[in-house]
Amino acid sequence: MAAAYFLARAGVAVTIFERQATLGGVVRHVIPSFRISDEAIEKDVSFLKKLGVTICCGAAAPSVDELKGAGYTHILFATGAWQAGRLEIPGDVAGVIGWMQGVKSGAIGVGGNVAVVGGGNTAMDAARLAKRSGAQRVTIVYRRTKKYMPAEEHELELAMADGVEFAELAAPVRQQDGTLTCEKMVLGEPDETGRRSPVGTGEFFDIPCDLVISAVGEQVDSALLQANGIETDRRGRPAFQTNLPGVYAAGDARRGPATVVEGIADAAAFAREVTGRDHTYEIPAAARVTAAEASARKGILCAKAPCEGDRCLQCSTVCENCVDSCPNRANVSVTLSDGRRQILHIDRLCNECGNCTAFCPYDSAPSRDKFTLFACAEDLADSKNAGAVFLDERRVLVRTFGEPREYDLLGVNDLPSELETLLLTVKKRYAYLLV
Image (cartoon, rainbow, N blue to C red; front, side, top):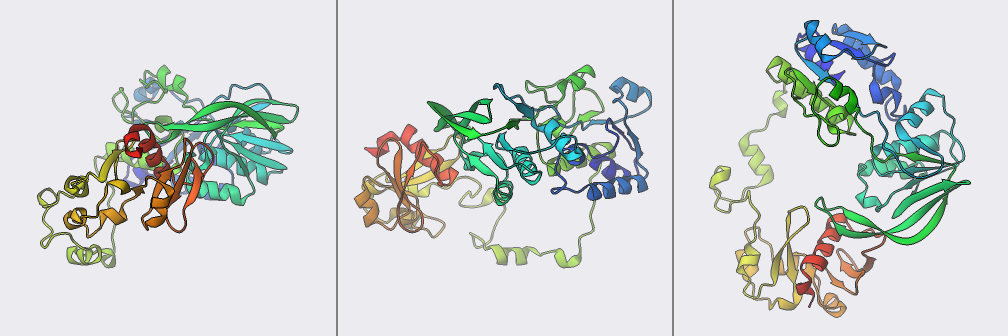
């Protein structure tokens, strides 16, 4: 629909082929109405009709060869990710897409206790839909903790506001007799993305549950794509510009489960491929800012603010002056699992010589401002720095703002995920700093 809008606005003749009886895809048939109303979708449909878009609903998708034979020069597969990921446990388990579609249409009733397995935006939608549709108790079950859930933060907040409960560090094992049995997990080392891998403990606990909703990753219908000769990767996803001339893929069909906004971005990119130009927007004069005004608001590092490549401090790269200038090596550059670097100050190696402050281009005092690793709790108490001291294999004492607090690195905690990743990286890869 977004691609048709962009193209029709540019004067291109467009036809939409839709297998359902009405336009709207996952947004209309799956996403709950309290998120996006049918009235809003109907306004978009009406707008497309006014723009002259031809809409063919309720028919099987024609093949690429058929479309090209009919004279279509550009073809976009925006077929979504309708296949629910499978949760391989015994019991009463429903796929999230079919279940949400049934509830929204009124074909499926909701009651009792519901568990939603997964941590993405779709899981949040399913849990909220169950709660609003009559479920007595709704629990989201996730193998990691809340902060590692892929769902947007505001989606988590909305689910909690609706009364959804969370079972963190829980891996479902089976659903039987109104109960979901889960294995307790602990968090292991961060992977290459910075997310910590869940590890089973061999301990189990139960959650009241009459129905499990599997929201563990919706899949693209790769069979449809492959039947048309479109190459896909190991996950069954094609490239934006496929191996077939003039054939493209967008939205969930290309990305896997994504957001509506990402789908619209793909649609705009497809429109550019067809028209050969970007759509231009009228920007009010009042919205334009001069270079002088921008510099005045942001501030500049150098007297003349030269071009990026000529800046004396090479600000496009990581500054590690405090590491290079410290004679005692009290400032260390720590490489995180995703490749980013973080400066860590080592309290026991610092003799407060002042070199790092003198050489810092940002008017900072790294020996005081950088997150600091302390040798013992007494040293942490004697300092005002934000920092941490490892107490044992799983406990760490951390001060960010306010008084120090003890955290369990293997359990549920409210440490910011990036700080937790830093501490785990130090513990695993830089253990010599703890001596």
